[in-house]
Amino acid sequence: MTADSTRDTPTLAGQAAGEPAAAQAEDALKTWGWASYLLHLIVAVAAVLPSAQASICLLLVAFIMDLVKRDDAAGTWQATHFSWRLRSVVWAGVLYVVTIPLWFLLILPGWIAWGLISIWFLYRIIKGMARMNAGRPV
Image (tube, rainbow, N blue to C red):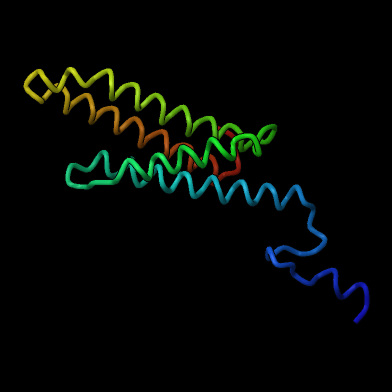
């Protein structure tokens, strides 16, 4: 076995031994990002479909993941995605709370408001996923 033959041997992480650490870190951030987007998407679709129920726990898990990993993405194009997801959750939460009184006005106004907020949240998640897939910041 020569020194050159070990260069192409995969490591435990599944990366070539010669691959820079920065590329591995970027791939890891992308994996975290996709996991977070998937959890957000499940909650967003469930919010739009009347019969679907997704736990707010999924959203909290995704939110905490983004908070924990946000600093790792600082200075990269992926940092915008972490901020995008965090702002989406915070704004949706604020809008849901602000529109709670509309439910006391014969239910229909609250249902319409929450439906619009849910569609807006779904739009933001899909837009973020499309940009991440293209390797672009949001």
